[in-house]
Length: 433
Image (cartoon, rainbow, N blue to C red; front, side, top):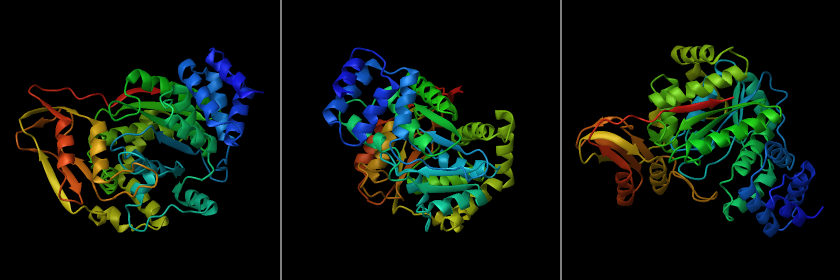
């Protein structure tokens, strides 16, 4: 089998065979296929696409390129949740304890984030003492005992995807539905879950800017998951403005705690209940999403969800006092309010730019080796559609340096106020099962 023949076949619009896809992934991972040939095939896929069978084969080949996590010793149906990313996306911090409190095992493997803020692990490490370096036996024991544990990603999970993503990033082939879908789903399949709930974001702060593209990606990933024997469904949700109010690691942990207490932002709470209901159904703990929602709402109202958060944090070495008193979390030195220059209704809060402002403060990474400041970030006081008076604070910037003129200017430019009432965007666009 020759790599040039595979490139030409896809260039000319034909479907690659299972054997050709497996050959490419195996030989490229082993270093036997040069980057220039791999780049040529990626560009051919970018323009010609892949059918459903090809996407499944590509995903499975990437899964088989490295380790697979075995969760078979954990009782119950293990349901994983994945978000395609966004600004202020705190859902994992809430959903883990929430669904675990109603008997759904959460065996979560997470990574550190690139972009606006840290990943789930970085956020959890805002809690003093919390650690994710857990041996496999301990991880399994904690999930069986407490229904929840979070561990750092294995170094050899889907190495083919790591190599291909680095190449896509520098060859203009990132924005390809087959390549995005297989990249995400290979990691989810390798992580060992029985079922997967996907939160596919759309809007200015999302990877998929348009609803049509988000729908195509969601359907592609749901198809891959189901073809590979994982019960998979997707929720398409809005990311034209930040989710919730907090953007920043410790600030998001604080907001997650408030949400588990029943005092969280309306949009964040609603999205968590929607995603959580699907997770509970896939775990066969409820017959319908409506029944599952009632179970989850009761877990919040009774305090069960918050207690599960305490158990989870304590089991992984974290200071559990933070849950009762979030003021113990890391705090920035300076808080600066950005005030409205005129009265009206909030027309837009451009999520992508708010995230960029948080990164300028130090809340996120530009490279995987960058240090992040867990205490800094932005807390919104208004959402799209809200009334605002002249001089009223729109948001508060939490910073560890006095000169934040660049950040304030960026924020000012990306919060627009209209003179007439504004209808906020829908939170949930579609559910795909």
